[in-house]
Amino acid sequence: MAGDTGDKDTGTAPEPSRRALLGWGGAGLALGAAAAGGAVAAVRSGGNTEQAADSGSAVPFHGAHQAGIATAVQDRLHFAAFDVTTKDRAELVSLLKEWTRAAERMTAGRTVGEGAYGGPAEAPPDDTGEALGLRPSRLTLTIGFGPSLFARDRFGLEDRRPEALVDLPKFPGDNLDSARSGGDLCVQACADDPQVAVHAIRNLARIGMGRTAIRWSQLGFGKTSSTTPGTQTPRNMMGFKDGTRNIAGTDEAALDEHVWAGRTDDAGWMAGGSYLVARRIRMHIETWDRAPLQEQEDIFGRDKGEGAPVGKAKERDEPFLKAMLPTAHVRLAHPDTNDGATILRRGYSFTDGTDGLGRLDAGLFFLAYQRDVRTGFIPVQRSLAASDALNEYIQHVGSAVFAVPPGVRDKDDWWGRALFS
Ligand code: HEM
Image (cartoon, rainbow, N blue to C red):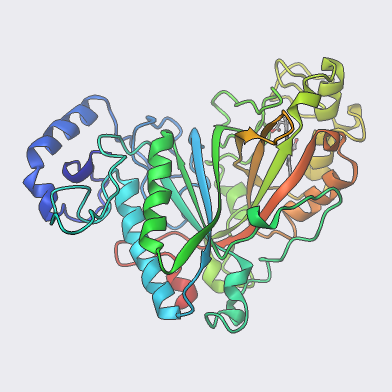
């Protein structure tokens, strides 16, 4: 982020602030360096197709869909769920407007408001400052609205709750911690630089003070999915390639069919949006690490080196499900086993210290986007919870579901306008 002086304009950012202009000399240098490094990649509005994006570049914030869903998956995550503490609808609306303007600036590599320094000494600066000098790092900020936001006697939204935003059923094996579940709002910050993602969540939380409070948050590293089939598939904490068969960010037909809410779906205000399921899945990696290789491969139904399905040679070969054990993860998760249910996975690995029993608190922070949770995550997870051989090594410990509204169209639009108008 070039800071007060670094207005790396993607064509959508507001005019530089007064303080930005005072320091314009530095901006020239920053922009010059960025241009030399090809920092701002040519990206389509909505940020969906920046396959070859430079890891420092900016992803456009405005578009028909929110960025951070079909966008090529960034390296790092900071996800936060918020409780709305104000009871006042107008205060919530003004918060969402303020968040939108801040998100516009941060995703373009700019500071919040008037910046991190140079203002009146008697007032705290608008921006906390730790992203000064860092590039936009493909930061995307994606907002979601949880079921509790639509509750009766809160903000008058009870008739606006989409039917597709269901409360998830309790699945066999769930061991959910309420302190790591739910939330009125969520913001998913993805970036190639962890400091840029953390800075973004911190500054939104700061703007929200008095109106929202962080309910839980999750840091993620090592993406465990891919929306860019042309690139190397990342590996999860169990050492397997993860994200091989996923919806590609460029596959408009699949996105329209399985990810984006349609105009004729039950809630009109959600058209162009999506539904997000977040699951914190603990992995018992110490036990996994003692499992023989053959057992590990049988559990997934793919080999560990290449990632090829059972009986096939190459990662991208079409899986032959009947060649796999009936309890194999891939067989059970495949659309053919679940009435065609297809989701866009976008999860990350985590390790959060120890569990106090001498083991790492590690796992997969599973994130999946879909057009309707009832025909997406739920049927797939029902199959997995019932029979997946992987269940011996994992446990779902956190859960949340959110309606992710459509994209912010331009600088007059704001997160949630269609819902609140
Ligand atoms: C810690 C938990 C999990 C691990 C380690 C894991 C790992 C994997 C791996 C290694 C693959 C094969 C490569 C690929 O196609 O991406 C895969 C596929 C898949 N997983 Fe998972 N997964 C986990 C949880 C889940 C959950 C909770 C769901 C959804 C409810 C899910 C849905 C899928 C789907 C849809 C596929 C692709 C199946 C296909 O079309 O072939 N996974 N997973």
